[in-house]
Image (cartoon, rainbow, N blue to C red):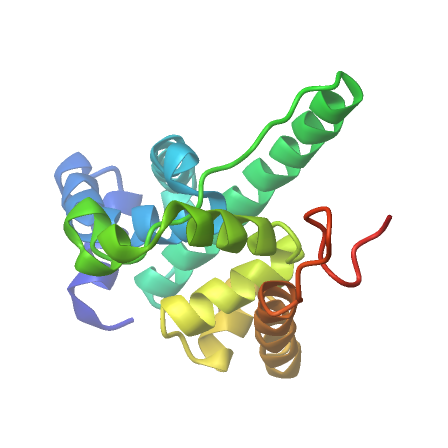
Length: 197
């Protein structure tokens, strides 16, 4: 194990609350950023709290076999996938009830003060949100880790507990699925070519 995060994690695993608090302070940005990109702005805070609760409950099992950030990415992604699955069930129930349940679009890095976020029109944000809904959760996770978090395929494989080649394939398929939806030509009546009638 190398680096301060690993040493802090080992101290936290022995019940050192101050070490755990320092881990939270140092890595809360990473957790919130991944949660925001996977679940959307509205759900990111609740997801982040759930992640840190799971980290505290699991920290005794941290052995330093992987780096702390890789271990934290794994818990964050798994928490988001679990919450997304629950959300999908709610959406299905809401659709049966005739109501719509929409998740917020992940914001670009930098938040509201980011000129890129300000320049992104509401219409474009809705297009991207809708496109992300067409990406399978595991492909979206790999895409976020690769194209937004900058992890290597080996790191993604460790986080998602899949082979390197699968990590590469999932990230590629996620990106292709999102771009495929974004580049469809709208048809009369507001549907895109290839949409089910």
